[in-house]
Image (cartoon, rainbow, N blue to C red):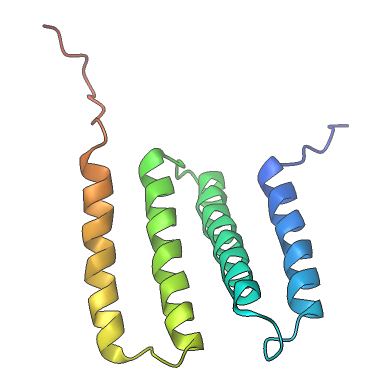
Length: 126
């Protein structure tokens, strides 16, 4: 019988979800200082990143590889979703904001990917 392997990603995600439940379960947003709200937002963003990364890793089971480009895409997607949630929580999210946020995310992804070295299919001889 094979031994069940546990993934470090699943352990990290489970630990983050426990911390989320404890933090958000025992704090009152109306009475917490602003530093606590910032900590909660950062905790939400890290958990969201782990979830997006997990979705890409689930894709690896179906034949899609989890490459550096997908890791960069996961970071950009997390930033866009976290920014939208942050704006929504302040009551400042509108249609125009999303129309500005999405092209900015596309430009950020292209900018981050531009500096990466392309992998040649055939070795280049000099």
